[in-house]
Length: 154
Image (cartoon, rainbow, N blue to C red; front, side, top):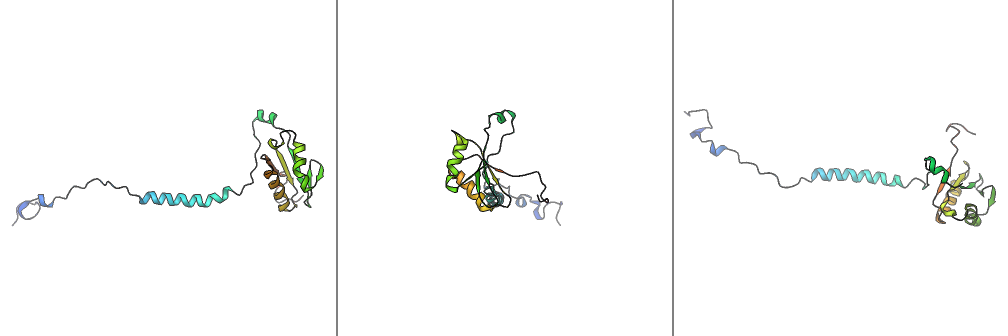
């Protein structure tokens, strides 16, 4: 018969004591890899969306900035793809010289507003904007009409 309610035969507790656990000195990289993979997927999905927008410079909303902004040169693309600078028609080859002339001495620093007819070919508007951008005009604005709601025709 064993005496005492101790740890079995002989009453020796020493042999049954669990060994002390040492602190884990390795870094568990599994959660780090999981987080990095999620971030990688997010950036892979969102990166192509950043290149979709047309590079335009939006006007400032401060009142003091409104006084210093020069009047923009307006380039209009008609329904049939005809190009106008101001109110006069221009040939494709004369587009850059006419916009530079209308913009004044520092024409490439002045804003250029591109107005395209809603029924104009997309290619015509894109070509005009690309040509202006390639010529060094950096402040390109695409003008749209916001008066009518999307369901209305006018």
